[in-house]
Image (cartoon, rainbow, N blue to C red; front, side, top):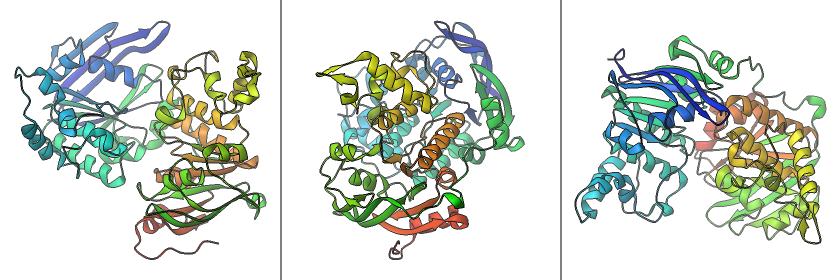
Length: 505
């Protein structure tokens, strides 16, 4: 079964103005296989998937399904052909129920004048039970991001797909939810359903996929069986060079200091987290580890007064602070980078310069009016330090790659000359090349004396970038690991342990 080709892309090209998104691309998908697509942002992966799903029309080339040429003119046509697409970005209607979202396409295609909610809820419940405990009657807006992602996946499972495209499906999922997804992928594959799996996470590709194809600069570079290649081979193919050090050198012995930049004591916010105490020392990168839902983001947002009503003490360079609002934190140089880049990190429709100055308008304004030259000078200066790649400072942030969008989000924070930065999932949805750049930037910032706190659900990243990791479990600090003890096994043990928290000093 694995050698029967179901989807065959031949010599497909696509340009957007002067940008060649795809250049004479060939790609084959076999029946019942899980085929990974890897490549940096801007490599052409999304364009090819949008062509397969009928969102974008190719300029030239042929698409064969079961050996027959097909013209996929819209997503509706793709669905009729048995092609389902789970996008990385949530595309649900927030004000209707889970069941109504899952069967929206079928309801729209139905000739019936009336909808049967009970029938929809029953069918939705049968599918949702495979994925987790989600109420089909719940409004989508009331669900967590991870549950909304599961609903997206459940919606695709209603379509009776022959080809299922999954674009970064685990980006918002917990480890348990991700493992459930992988189990379902194996079951679908065993039934002959073919899966295209897009991910920047090497572990997921090597543990769950049969073959992998690499794209770079709009071209198909290579396809190999996963068992016949290595992560280093993939990275080399993706970036066109060897990335010897995906993580920069950690804090050296002679750089270590007992000087505390940020001190947090007894931070508490009702049932969400309690008695949180930790220090951030000069020159180090402190990692916040733990399972998704343990309270890591809530703690960071509590320190920054972005949500909740936390009590406790926060001191900066030994001076106690009175913080009521995020504006107070910004004024003292404590800032937060959201895990949800597109919703909370950047203003996609505004320019690079406008985004960079968004938190420092006083610096670029005179008499209440923003000076364009001052704004551009600020953006150019901060952008140089981040090695930001762009055409013009007036370009909308939406035109940038994911990695460069993340750099703009970071530029917005650096423009206020911060003393402490909390970074929540700093490289989510970012390709390997941009990840290495961002990791190097964080180390440079730490060496310049800025306090860095990193929250990451990618264990290799958390270990690779951090000098010290404190682990959060169910709203409490369960322990700390450093040096050779900073292993996945030790962090996961602390993240899931049932013992009482250990005192940190």
